[in-house]
Image 1 (cartoon, each protein chain N blue to C red):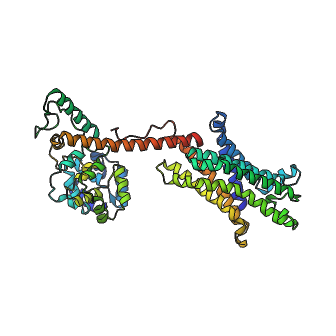
Image 2 (cartoon, rainbow over the protein chains, first blue to last red):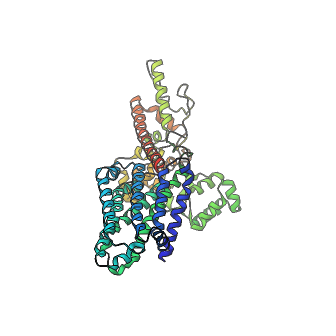
Image 3 (tube, rainbow over the protein chains, first blue to last red):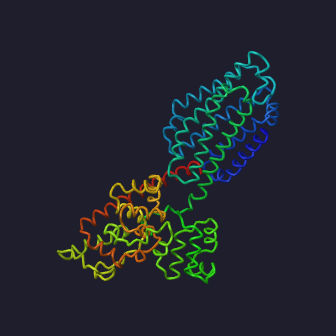
Length: 246
Length: 258
């Protein structure tokens, strides 16, 4: 079940990235292509098979997991910039790119890297679950590592959320509002990852998987939908009828 | 609320006893599939009855009045008020009238409006024929023309429609026939007026005398006309500004995320 979810997410994200290649070549919104490419890479690195293969090639020290965290940071940062710019959410834009946003980004990145270096990370294991259980010293460290890794995406998502809520209730075209709703849902899902340590143990890994992947899917489909809306009634469409016309 | 299929079939049988469904559709200019769908759903649109009655030379208002949800149309309707008539003149027509008056005012000392009883086109100078209703904001203008300040309240109390849904229909220049009649009743004006404003029927079909709108326009003083035109322009300007603002926002979204 989880495997299916993982591979479909990978396929969806990869397809959207591929679909953006022509416009990226033309130089139109190239960052969007990079965002989708980064997201595809992140999903690839969170699936067991590819993760182990890549990490072994990198020395079996779970460096791939560190890369995964930083790739997510980069993707969410650019995503935040594009979305806040697009929706004209200057407050959220400032929260992400301003001094506070940069401080959060720097702090979480440093924490992730530092904690990673402090751990004994031998032995490729997706999500570093095996690393956590191997020795007692690693267990608290890996908790901090995970928390820092979730903190930055959650920060950006929370900054996005009010702007998305405004867009959903606005008078924008329906497809854009549905897209904004999906982006908002994705933001909520990412924010929920903050509370992973407090989930009842019997929810197990499934709840976390579902939340993580629905967040990614919501973001991908939301952006794809907005892009599609742009194609449908973007440039070629006539301006909306004014009431002076008869 | 809408016309039940059974009642419609009975009425249609009375109107065109020998005609097949496809004959009726051809004569009335409705798609067969549209009518079939309405019959299957058991709800026939008022517009369907109107088109068929026109095709068979029946007054659409009296045809509609035979159905339960439209029976108020059968009552003897009071003549439309002047405000109602003027509300059904499009903004461009109002502005043209205003300009003509100022030209006339500049030419002679006394502005010669009036000339009661004259239909459009009869006046030498105020010649341009008024566009028939509906116009771009005819529904809202009609409701505003008959609103005593509490009308929306009474309509929503009488029909159970939420005020914001009612406003949304007015903004979209739409009003279901049932609501249009309920609105007219709540305001105490002729029941068919709203159907004219929504474009379901013509003014003549509603019993408005020919040239009534032109006459109503002519009886307006320069001050009244100018004020009304100003109000219309202000509303139009606001709507246009809102549209432009929305357009700017969507353009920006596609610039960044398209």
